[in-house]
Length: 124
Image (cartoon, rainbow, N blue to C red):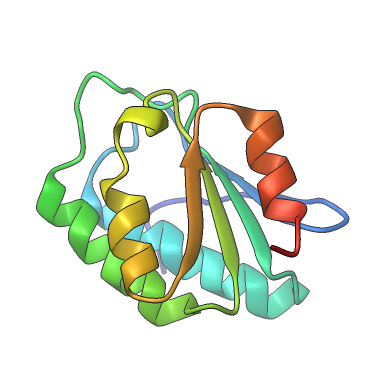
């Protein structure tokens, strides 16, 4: 049983997870990844939006934690699930996107919700 809650909204074509303002550690994000895997298996949806726009950006996530999470995401989803991350500083921080993509995951990070949703829902 997880000590975290990861509610999500099921939209017609994708799932949306909202990251709370206090969630910063690697354990939280590992647990979120498990919740994402479970949700894709339960719903059959293969597109996920992770909204980090309200999370605390003053304390960055450690680079090695991002690296390990990127590897786990690529291992869990590969190219079968498309993941978009909405984050205020995403245009300046591409490490998660680079590592995940290099391992075969289909991911994108941006601070522009509408363009990110366009990418998420496209077939490119």
